[in-house]
Each structure stands twice: as C-alpha cells, then as structure tokens.
Length: 324
Ligand code: NDP
Image (cartoon, rainbow, N blue to C red; front, top):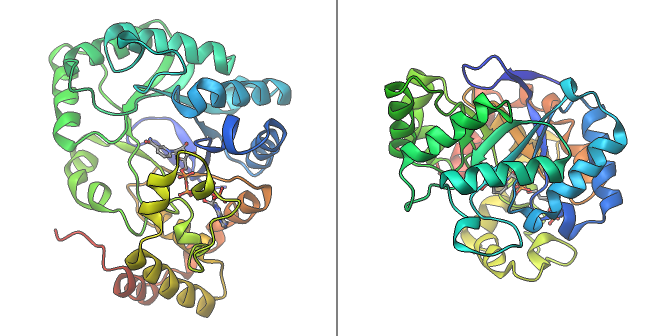
C-alpha cells in the first residue's frame, strides 16, 4: 500500500481507503461488512469512511462493531464521520451545520463507532441556513475537546471553502484540512478546476468519493443489467437514472475496449486514473462483495500502465477534461 499526506497536514492516509455508503447496514449483511473491513485492513488500508447519514446511523454501528471485534490498535487506523443529513431521528436541529447539531452529531457518531475521537470529521454538505463562522467555531470546539483531530467539508464550493479558511485565520482557529468531492472519469470539474487554487495556496487534502461513478466505470452496466447491484435498491431510482445514461454507457463501452487492450479490469484502470492526480490524497473504495474489494485493492499495480499515450486515449474517449 502507498500512503499519502492528507494535503499539507501531517496525517498519512492509505492511497486506497474503504467507505460504507449504501453497503454497511443496508445492502450487505453485517458479516460481509466485517469481512470487507478485515480484507481492507490486512491490505494496508488505514482509512475507513462513514457518516451519520449512512443507513440512518446503522452504517456507523456496523463499522464500530467490526473495529471493536478486530481489536485493532486505535493508532493504526483513521476513521471519519460526517455531519449534515442526520440519522433516523427527525427534527429541525437534528440536521445541518448549527453548533448544536455539529456537536451532538459528533457525540452520536463516537457512540455508534465506539471510539473516543474521530480522526476526520466532515461537513457533509454546505448549510445555507448556518453562518460558516458558527460551523468553524463548532469544529474548533471539538478539536479543543479532543473529540476530532481534523475537520473538513464535502461538496463545498471553492468560495465556501475560502470563507471557512478566512474565518479561521481571522480568529486564529484551525480551518478545513480536507474536502471530500466526487471524482471520476465522468465528474472532474471541482478536482481539476474549481479547487486548484485551494490545493496550491492552502494545501487542501482530498478524500475522493464514487471513483467508479457508482459502478459505471467498472463496465458492468454496459449490458443494462442492474440485478443484485445498488441500482436495484429501493429508493435508488434517481441513481439508476443518472448511471444508466446512454452517453455515459457508450464511454464505458469504449473504456472497456481500452482496458481489454491493456489486459486489466476496467474498474482498476478507472481507479488508477484517479490515483494519478497528485491532488488526490485517498480514493475511497466502495464494495458490496469481497471479490470486488480484493480486485480493487490491487489497483496500484495498474498505475504504471497509465503512460502519456494511454492517458491521451482515455481523454479522447471521455472528453470530460474541464477547460482551464
Ligand atoms: P464507487 O463509485 O467506487 O462505487 C462502488 C460500487 O461499485 C460498489 O459498491 C459496487 O456496487 C461497484 N463495484 C465496486 N468495485 C467493483 C468491481 N471491481 N466490479 C464491479 N462492480 C464494482 O464508490 P462509492 O459510490 O461506493 O463511494 C465510495 C465511498 O465514498 C462511499 O462508501 C462513501 O464512504 C463515500 N461517499 C461519499 C459521498 C459524499 O457525499 N461525501 C457520496 C458517496 C460516497 P454494487 O453493489 O452495485 O455491485
């Protein structure tokens, strides 16, 4: 495994990490989730990603039980949670980024994950109804209390991140260390254009989500079959519509031919392409089956195949590079 610094921070995260969205506490059994955790850890994965909103809090419970069962030393792993969407409990102060919810959600995540502190704590989305200043202060309270070690954002605009950085500087507080954006061969704007100044000037780290665009970039949907996948889950019709888009499927077909030429699975080629970007600190893998995870965890061996020529062939197929 390769380890990368989380932006300019001193923390090192495995280049490939494991996330639990849609899988833990939902699509897969707790025993498969536990197996996935073990496979990842044994392969050198040190970062496990979670959120209060995943399976309405159940994902954190499942991950917490697995961490406890494995008896891993606390120093050997990095675990995250995210605040914004709330859990199964509904109410105006059980969502968003108010001081009240940021602090209460952290306490809830600590209980569900059965840990004394979160290594990473993300604002899962921007909250238009809370001043950014309030959230920055709340994060710094948690830092002071030792309940979190680093805080960051997910899917914030560069302008929102800049505001958080400026507020933190104004009060001598700690600003966001990392952002969690979507990044894959289809979705590139934030990582390759919008955040460039934040990487250069502020050393923002990144933990990448949906590197396979929910499985599309493994090539598995080119036949249109969705049985036994996340696109078949109740409530995921919006995702199915987004993934089963003819233009994207055509790109996946062409990428599949290129992967065949290189004699590598398309999933690994797509993940390796994410790792090529030096502004990526870690690529979060998702898996519903142990075989998928085992395959994806060998991605680092594919990175050297991404020569200038292969990268150009990929660009010619996807045509998603943002204009700088
Ligand atoms: P991917 O885009 O990589 O999708 C993972 C899914 O693709 C798997 O669950 C599986 O789906 C399928 N898959 C994976 N490997 C293979 C393979 N080798 N062959 C065929 N199919 C494969 O990542 P996710 O969307 O899961 O995102 C990763 C993590 O990022 C999440 O777990 C979460 O921690 C985080 N995340 C954060 C978000 C945010 O807003 N901050 C949003 C979304 C995710 P299937 O079950 O269908 O087989």
